[in-house]
Amino acid sequence: MIVGLGNVGREYEGTRHNVGFAVVDRVAAKFKESFVPGKGEYYSAQIRHRGEEIVLLKPTTYMNNSGIAVSDAVERFGILHEDILVAYDDFNIPLGKLRLRKSGGDGGHNGVYSIIYQLNSENFSRLRCGIGTEDVVPGRDMADFVLSKFEAAEIPVAQKMIEGAVDAAFVFVNEGIETAMNRFN
Image (cartoon, helix red, strand yellow):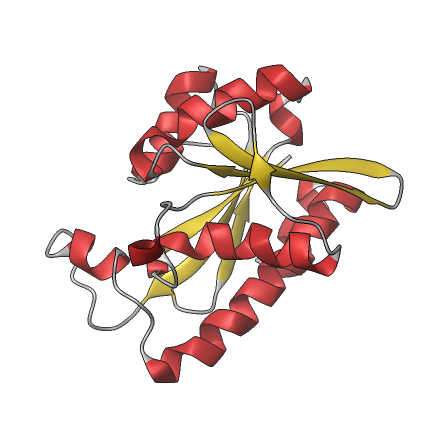
C-alpha cells in the first residue's frame, strides 16, 4: 500500500503539506486510475504493476488524524505493516530531495505520529519529500509554511521531486525498501 498524506479540500491543493497526495495522484494517473471513496475515511485506488496488487490511499481525516484511515485500510485490505510506504512532506529536507526510511519515529510529523499511534507500530516505510527552503526557521510559523503553495520558481523542482518519489515508490514495491533507499537517498 502506498499512502499519500495531505489535507482534503480545495484550499489545500498545491500546498507543500499535500506533496504526499501529489505522489499517489501521479501514480494513479500513470495507470489511468481514479480515486474513489473508500469504506472508511479515505479515497483509494487499486493498480496492478508487475504482478503486484497495489492499494493507493489518500486519508480524508486531515493530516493529524491520518492514522485512523491508514489503520482502517490496513485491516480492510489485509496489508502487512512492512508492505506500507507513506509519502509525505518534510521541511527538514531541502526542497526537491527525497529520503526513504525502513522504519523509525515520527520526526515531528503529526501525520506520521498518528499512523504510528493507530497501528501501534513504527514498522512501515517512509518516503520523505523535501519541502524545506533557506527561509524556514523550525518552530516559527511552520503551519503557515507547510500550508503555503509552492512559489513559481519552486514548482519545477517540486514536480521533479514528485516524479522521483513515484519512481522510488515503484522500486519499493518491486525491489524492496533497501534497494529504494540505496537508489534514492
